[in-house]
Image 1 (tube, rainbow over the protein chains, first blue to last red):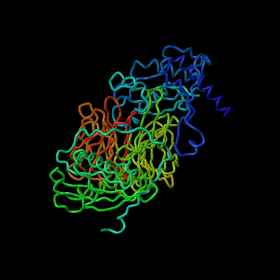
Image 2: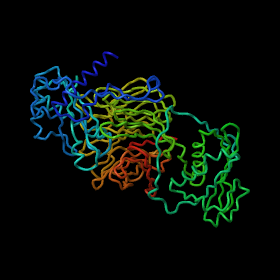
Image 3: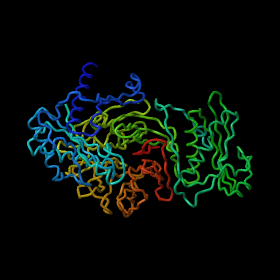
Image 4: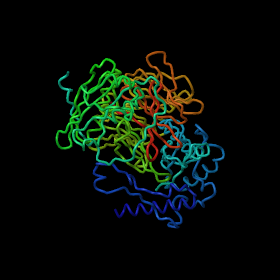
Length: 187
Length: 432
């Protein structure tokens, strides 16, 4: 428990710092250990522990300089960590060239950094096909970073499809904010 | 009269170890004009306390919900017979009924009752059914659905599906603190039980052919994995957590394999078959497009799936033997996805795009492949056939909220199941 707690705190620091530097969405400041808050009624897990838990890192200035933007001097472009897409598209729009380049430089100059690319879609269409579209978007960002010299081993992708919207709502303004790839630095 | 089925023992099985929650309100949005009029007379309890469970009401609600029957309002009943001898047929005929169901509950001690019921044709006074069902208190609801099934079958010649169940995903709370639940309930939305709960998304519940186990996708590790979970025991097993995508599980008809969607390192989604016994993995499709949402043919030799290999998503069928080339099935419109088969494989339900909206469509597989759009919503997705093929349950939107809805395969009957809390999505109807 002690070591996992330490790990938790360090993840918390890192994420809090990343949030400060990168202005990342609120979502990224909630850190949970794998499977926290997961219950399987009737299983030993649920029987052994009452209720669900949600870990939230302490806010504030903890760990002012996290690994997320180590020594990169958090430029404007690096502070941006979401790429938005047009409907049913997975090509990266020219306006994101600076953002991709900034993260590529950060990753190539810090080979120990790892970046998770989380692909998302708006709610329209079927859920499983949207998983495919989200993956396609995450892969588009992955390829763009690799073209600029980022090592394959530094990048992972995951698609949440339409399951984890950034904002609620069923109009174009909400959808536009949900068709995205979140770039999340991981330990 | 038959020997064995005369008394159907209904075991009040406690299938899950979790509490009930929430409730659905059923709204019939469109009924059938020529629905059959039936009087379901309140069943008489022998003892006062048995009256706390209203078997006749559940039967009447089931029949009315099917859209094929019009159950007489109790307020209009002028008498309450409990067996054939007490029925004044002329009166019930004058009140406009074609059929009448009467019944009686006899205490067997403890919380167990014998429910004796009879169905009559009001016009010719013929007795169509006469049975008794023994049930304890927890089995009362199931017993009621079984009575409705027998009435439905006897009058329409179609096997009833009232005693089946639905699985669905419920999402409670608002961003960024959402709770995802995998829930199993009776087909009418009552008696819901939480099978699995997580702070990360749950997706794509799929029933095993024997109705004992669910496969589903869970993001509890912040990555997708496919799990199978036995409902009775809660025992669950992670069967696929490969690098990349692990999605869209579908059971083979023999229950021994799962079709599922996996990805290569460069993110190409294809359909695979996983043997649950040997763990052997067979790749079925190999195309740079998105291939996903597989569904087995009845004989276990073919898979229906969604692919955007030709541009937009369309539905294809491919044999599971190596070397078979997928055949495209849908050509109308630029978005047709997530196929589901009726149990006799005569019809294919799927999501189609029409005027910018997503709706449930039905295609005739036996005839000329004609396509019919059944629903009128903007966000109608995730169709699933009732095991008797008469109705399709799907996910819809009502006043900005995710709800479940039903439509008959002829489009004439439509209704909504509005949950008391949260968003409800991805319904999957159990087998018989």
